[in-house]
Image (tube, rainbow, N blue to C red; front, side, top):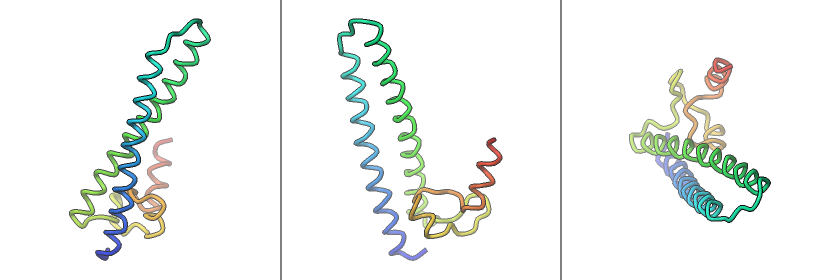
Length: 117
């Protein structure tokens, strides 16, 4: 991959990383606020519990993406970026534009997803 392409994806990934960190901080702040609320009845408790579960799921997903981005930034630094971890072919540019932290080409991604079923 050319230097200009690596720089392009690095900038996208770093921007996404910053956004995720802000999101996680915001959700954690929101969860802290929820824990300080005075709840008067079971409906309030149920609502807060539901919000907490949803927010926690969002945080877990965002933390997973953050780890994937960190791994991908390491690959860019090592100049190993854009290579499928399964077949070792190049991952298509358009796929990387959609998911810059992709580790599989389209064909291998489908194989991995089908094997999870």
